[in-house]
Figure (tube, helix red, strand yellow):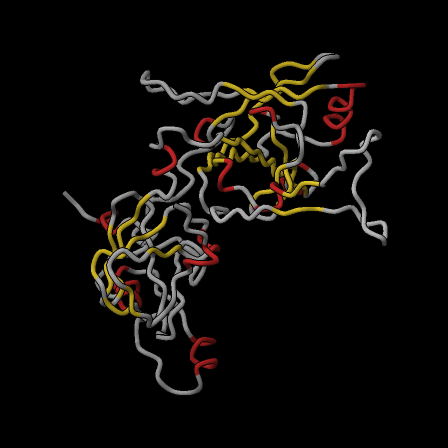
Length: 326
């Protein structure tokens, strides 16, 4: 079963019955879906959906339970092919150029471009391995080996620094790919096998309908290029690592403080409501909504978070116990 965001987007003030499924807004980059386990009417603002399977959250009268939409396909007796897609994100600040490279390694006999979530992933002469996790307590360090034909990759390394570039491994199933992947050019059965064309000279294309296309049905792993482990005339090999194991990475990245460190009304904070307060947690009631939002300021305290979100699980980015004394 597929639950694409286009058909299952959460809506405010809507009645949901038991079993209804919604997806969080695309800005949240959520791969989980949420099933209604207690029927009712949703709230006026999208809740801060949890990121752990089986976790629940109350949305006005509705209670949502998180689940993994890929589970049905993972447990199928004969699942469709697993597709591995890769994105390498280079930034001006870290790598000297702003660019995103997308490709797939040609697994499962696929040598043509793959379209997923509206983005094209060309087949490339790349080999990746080492993603397996073990029970030894150490994180894997995968390798990414790229063909160095005519020294092309070596030339790029002379221009740009690839270290610390973000590599996203996106895993999905063939049944969830965009419908564009299933278009084919109809060929004739003549001896010279020329393509069938219309009177205007256009090739005939027949399109199969893929009703299970779902760009949100995916598993995403994030890695970073830590070092160039090998370079020769045949290939260049990069060693990947989790962000925690990056060379020269200083920890902690977050300061332990009682105050929230998230940027107000941004992704981690997720507050989108119309209730506005001063930095001292006093309600702002005068003026237009636009004027109130201009004066709105978060005090970065737990009490500030509770005024906006109520008593539910809070997206608080601080450490409330930081000042507690034994």
